Amino acid sequence: MIQNMMNEGKLVPSDITVRLIQKAMQETDNDKFLLDGFPRDEENVRTFEKLTKIEPDFILFLDCPEEEMTKRLLSRNQGREDDNIETIKKRFRVFQESTLPLVNYYASKGKVRKVDAARPVEAVFESVKTIFSSANEQGA
View (cartoon, rainbow, N blue to C red):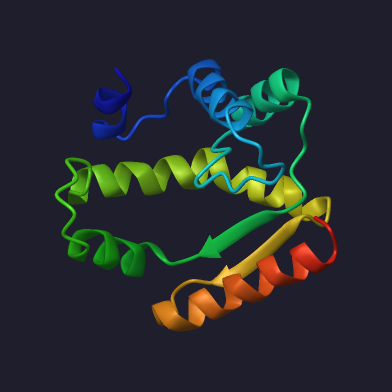
């Protein structure tokens, strides 16, 4: 079911996603987590905070124009079924409609760390490293 939804560019229901994340978090001794691509919509936020009682220390926003993102996804050659132009366009629309408002919500709380992801990969990596090093020093 999850793979079919991803192939269609749709979001997996929040309760399924959060329970999978929560299970993985509980099965480790780590107290810090990087959740890639989550939350994706307001329902994800509500469900995650309700079930885990956790609010993120910060949100890493890799800001990349649609054209550059599409070019990179199509050239990554990982054989993913959802790396096709139609699904990528759907995913970008879902991002603009559902996820971008969350970026704005967390920005209003001072929790967004924004990186210009249209730059070369090495430059983006250095910016991300700096953000995580700073967060680690502050105990986030």
